[in-house]
Image 1 (cartoon, helix red, strand yellow):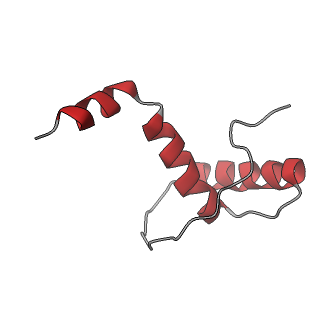
Image 2: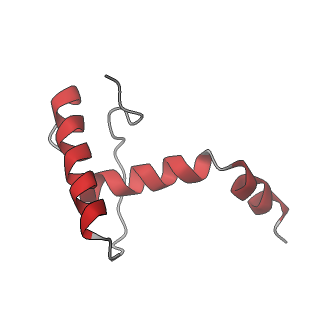
Length: 71
């Protein structure tokens, strides 16, 4: 099994508060456990979420195109 996220990069965080569903929280907890098992570095959902969002936006072609075209 291979997860999409590899080892997490070092980053300077900015605090942002979000609310998620119970189901999403459970899935994030599961992902964090699997990621920890695969990479040997303990991670929490809070450390995974920014990387997941960044990965999503980098791979969203429509978003990238619109961003390049903004005035």
